[in-house]
Amino acid sequence: MRKPRDFDAELKALEDKARELKTRKVQQLGELVIATGADELTADELAGALVAIAETKDTAKREAWARRGGTFFESRSRRADLASQRKLRSAPAQPGSAQSPASGNGSQ
Image (cartoon, rainbow, N blue to C red):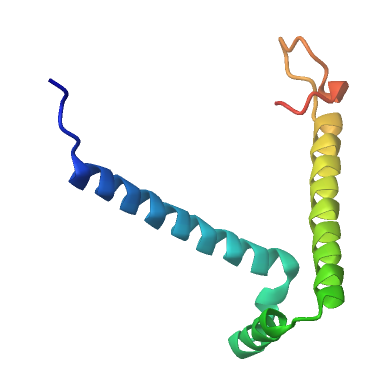
């Protein structure tokens, strides 16, 4: 005979997962606001801009915004890669290290 499913436990696990995903989404949105410099706007300005964007039906505008956002993320990731490579190159070699810091493997 098979063990009966514990629907209450499964439901609780799903609710916990949903809560965790929502929390992560809110945190990432806050990080995005800070990364773009939008944290210098007032809450009213930011909300107004977001409402205007959400109400926009012009696909050309939305596509242009999407391209600009993609460019923003690409440039940030390139800057982060370059910064980490500079740190690796400028870091002194650690005694007993088999690899030089300029090897560019990305790990420390």
